[in-house]
Amino acid sequence: MTRIAFDTTQKERGRIFDNYTEVKSILEKLNYICEEYSNFPITYDNICNYKVLIFACPDNSRLNFEEIDALKRYVNVGNNIILLSHAGGDRGRRTNLNNLSEIFGIKFNNNQVFDEENNLDFRSFPLVSTHSEYYSDVKIEEICHRSGCSLNLLNGTVLPLAETLSSATPDNVITAAISEYGKGRVICIGSYEIFRDEVKGGITFEPNLQFFNFIIDLLTQKELKTEKTKSEKVIKKKEKVITNKKQDSIKSIKKSDTKQNTNFNEFKEQVYQLLEHIKLNYNQIKDKMNGFNKNINQLIDSQKKLEMEYKNISEKVLNLEIDFSNQFNEIDKPGLNYGIIHDGLTEFKLEIDFINKKLDKLENEQKIINKRIENKMKIFNERENMIDNNIEQDEIVFIKASDLVGSQKKNHNPTFSANMDKTTSVRDGSMNNRRSRKDLEREEIVLDNSGENAKLKQFKKFLNFLKKQYDTGFINQDEYLEKKKKIECKIEEFNRN
Image (cartoon, one colour):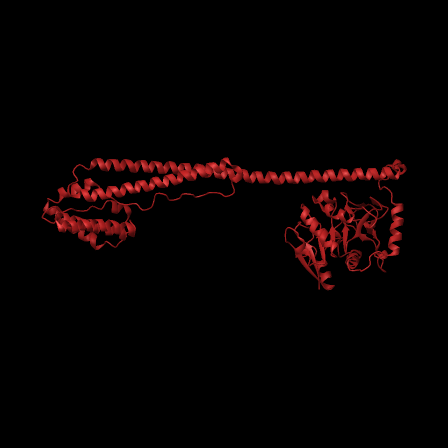
């Protein structure tokens, strides 16, 4: 079965699932397959399987050069196109159908056809005569050219299909035409509304329905031109006059002057279309620049956010360094705890170095952002949420030297030692429970300096405290095993001595 496509890439007003449902139904009764075509941009490979491609009044959209070349090739190899416009032509709809139709010798005028005498209740619904008898045995009565424009035939190979009456404005001008190009054909009609559903002067108007069937038949006829058609066209060409009757003096202008005037008007129209094209490109460039500026503003905001985060991290590092200095100054007599405290301070120094490396990385990221802002054309991707959590990882709770020293003095009191042993046993019994970071920081290791095994007990208690840190997720497995190994080495060394 033959496939017919209704284009939607140019935002056409006529849609087979909206206001062209009757057209779809008629074609399906004639054993055609009706489909919407929506692949953008239009390419020959995408449309070559359709026998007819219909553009039912593009609206505020333009075909690009590649699409026009694809459609030109599509017709040349034997396929067909139907172009439907509206009152105002390309200018009224902000389109460029003429860039395509003029290839086939037809031009849509930027006007509207009116008829005060012969119409369907409104002068914008004029009745126009058809030339159906030139191509078939059936004479179609006057059709309604609802809200449409007129056409110009640019060469002698184009054949008229419908024409306004002498009472119309403009009078005796073409409203529908057919052109042969290569092995295919193109039909242009100045109104898409003549085939609309459920409107006065639309597809339900009997002559309009007959005219639609007529143009579909024209696309399937093997031989389009007849001797009668040719002779009639020659007569109409000889009788053609300028439609503006208000200027009677124009009738005396020579044929060459008329041609020059026509060329000038065409040149003026081309200039206007070029200006419209430039305006469209300008608006597109303006939109892109607005989007580009928006991206730049977003990057600037990201930079400010990074600077603020960098400042906060720097303040935290400074506070950590101050705490480190204060803790170091508080250590007067390390005594038996010197080795443990020294290891803790070393670990703390490693954490400071780790944070400094993070800060260096953050500083490099900030330089990259600054460079990307200076080189605007290289900006394509947003950088957001670059550093969310640079500090809240791998924190280690350290034992203050003052706490350790203080615990030695407290152990001389037998009552206090008994209470602390009881407290320690309670802690050991609930070691697997999850506790807050603040509770762990306040945890004290009770030292027992009485007797010969005081240092050994101290190491074992620190092992228990280290196990609590690991069980609560305060330190990872690698840190736990490393510190545990150091303490076990000290216990082994103590036992040897």
